[in-house]
Image 1 (cartoon, one colour):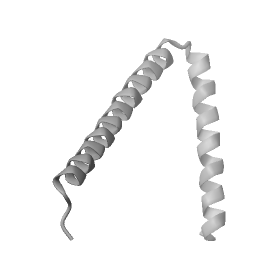
Image 2: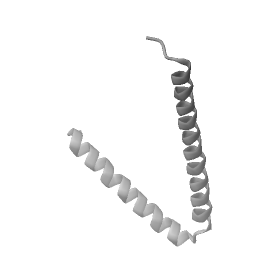
Image 3: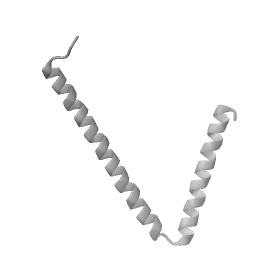
Image 4: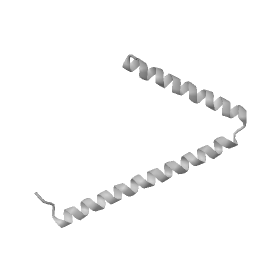
Length: 72
């Protein structure tokens, strides 16, 4: 069955709207990461080290959890 021109136009509009949302989310994510990087770069070295230790601990626990789930 072929689509009617009206249905096809609505489908194209929905696709265009979805593409616009995807681009918006990507741009907002880029801005958030850039802002986070700028804040991180202004932190004193002691706070950077503490943050790095926390992130490494979080990643290590997550990797261990995934290994346990897959019995690796």
